[in-house]
Structures are given as C-alpha cells and as structure tokens.
Image 1 (cartoon, rainbow, N blue to C red):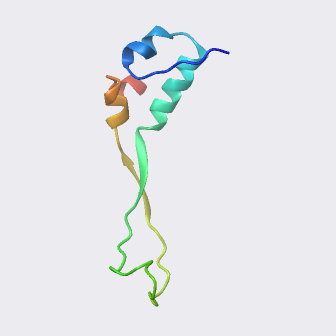
Image 2: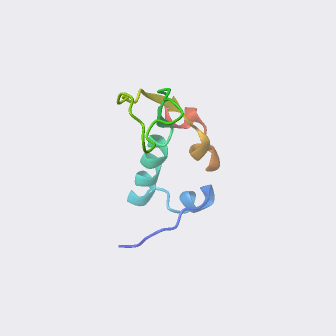
Length: 79
C-alpha cells in the first residue's frame, strides 16, 4: 500500500481519484468545525486547594475553516 504526504493542494490534486484522496477530502470536511468549551470557571478552578463545586463544561460547535482554506478550498466546495 502506497503512502502519500499531503502538504499542499498540489499534493492532493496529484492523487485525485484515489482512496487516499477521498479519505483526505473527508478529513478536510470534518475539520470545518471544532468543539469548544464555553463554560466560565473561577480563576482557581482545577488548582490544588479548590473546594468549590464541580462545574460541567458547556460544549459548542464552532465553524473553523482554517484547515480547508490552507488547502485553497472554501466552504462551498464541500456542499
């Protein structure tokens, strides 16, 4: 099985039509959002000596197009 190093759009275009290309495109599509914790915590939360309550995270999905843009794609390329 051949392996490919994909650092640029040109690298990706060079393997067009292959399983590796399809897999990489799926990974790029998956990179278009990230999950961040938007919970507010006290300054000393998680530090030794903290005696307050456990505070559950609040997860929110946020759009992040930086990875696909690095490969010269836009959001519309994945719709």
